[in-house]
Image (cartoon, rainbow, N blue to C red; front, side, top):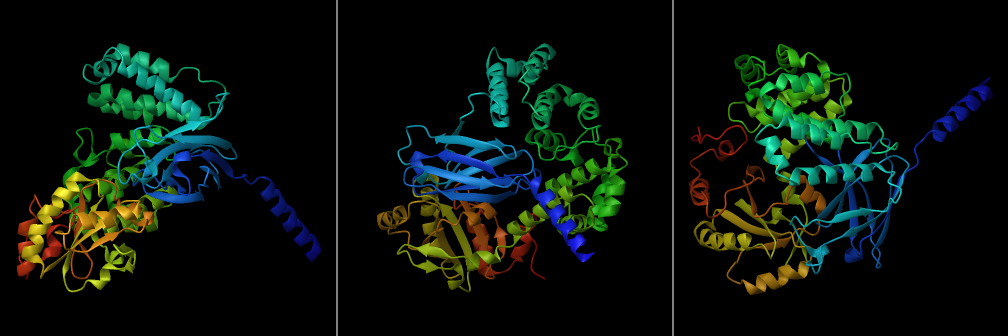
Length: 486
């Protein structure tokens, strides 16, 4: 009997394995990035837009690479080489042959740091059979239509229904028999994003047409773009029927996820439990930086929801937003991260003790960053006993930092290199420069992004220096007041 049972188990295992998806294969070429690494990300959810790395590969000396990724559904991928980024829609079990192109004006594109330089993905798909080809064709057709004859202005500013109908015929054109469910949803919600421009005054019509269904395409980029746009700051929307006074009271005085969900159910649009929870998550995310809401209570409600929800996608959304919030208000782990100094030796911020930190992120070709350094030089002379100034380079080529420091000897505070730690860049969103951060003596974030030297930084440092104020209250999201220390 035991042998029969084991044989049955073995048979079931074989059956499951026979239905398992084979990996997605991406075979590519990036001749400008030889000997670098390509990293592959996907969005864990599309409310927080948290990116998670799901693969990587070394690009060989000829610029060739190959990546295998396990996926069970159509997925939007982000492909990064250092700070360069491109994208690709992929489907399970498919093989993709791609190559990247950069405009010829960039001599060493793989060394470009923290700049929005387009990296074009070219897909070898001569028979026009893959999801990525369909979406690119649709987007190109839409772009061509909107760029001609002021069609975009006619739709956006004049609510021209005739032009919108013409756009609809383009979006819903016959794109071939290979268009699957993901692409059909993409068509529908691409059009929804434009139709909502005309429906904006009659938003109930758009809602009934696009949300009054049982399916919610949380993995579809077009659907989530429409969802996030429609429910952006819904607590301030003229079409929201949530009693806002009680909504704010629950958050600020009685933070309870179930009570908040029940209260939001008074809006007829939010009778559906799935969409109501998604809208609540979106509203809490938007409300975190709104001084009308108690941010600590928002954190509690999000946490409770992440534990109590029965929808796995919602758990991810709430958890990811919580992670992003924690990164904004707690940077203690930054003190223990490894950086490189100008000599190439490993160092940590924790080596600089008993001072506040003003951390500037920069690249050596960022003129605005260099301008800020002249302001930092003046502040350094005044507040060096209280504030530790540090500049961290995001240049890919470490030699640039060495030459930069020799060129500007008057900037006499520590200069470090991020040691190509892209997880650190990803966690704190270090892609738009100039950018700075202020930490307290224990490594907690006081301000991020922080004021520049041309802004209110002198007043802030003066308060820190005299320690007459409870600085942790100044800058935390949801509270912009300055209160004396008790």
